[in-house]
Length: 98
Image 1 (cartoon, rainbow, N blue to C red):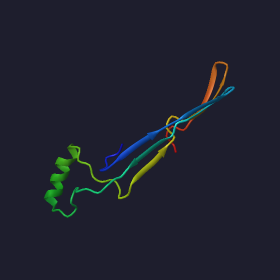
Image 2: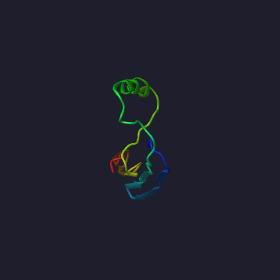
Image 3: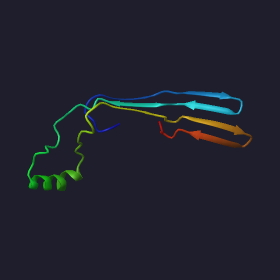
């Protein structure tokens, strides 16, 4: 998941098909997050406050908003196409490249 305020959802479903020496597995992953606004770091601060910010906040988990819109990503997940012959297999994988 991502550091965002609001509802987040991870959806994953799949199917595996086999025909003779071929095997196809489709398991896409969908990640969605509302990414609502929240009070974060104020940009109108003096140099001493900036110095304190970088000294202190860089060592704790204090998230800032990532972007201004809803986060939605579709990944290939554990999908692959595989050809097998005797003791040898060749596999083409998405490796989360979608």
